[in-house]
Length: 124
Image (cartoon, rainbow, N blue to C red; front, side, top):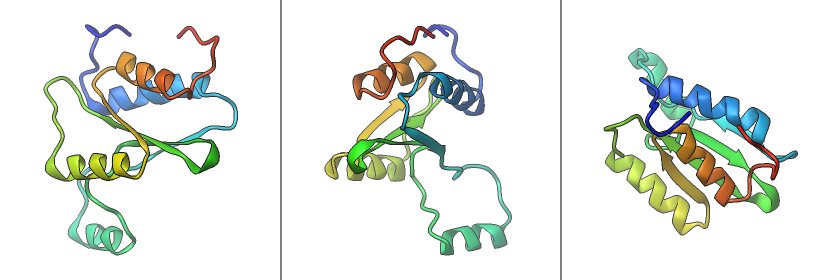
């Protein structure tokens, strides 16, 4: 997918990034989604908050060696970080975690390559 071929929704972007990670991540690394978005009734929202769901957490987490984590916040064209997402970004960086915002699959690929998370022979 080229930079010009932007997904029309964050769901489509996140799905495409996950499909890439399924084939490209180095063996032993593990990724997961943080499903903070979406509409929920007030009762469910209260339960999730009590269970530790926090606003601003990035969409994807990649578990890496030696206790390291990487985080990817996905936005579609025109999207920007909310104040709580900026706070989460700043905490991640202060604690030494890798963090990036990606608006395209190519941007996510560049980040994953830069942090050494992908296999060297992947051409997706």
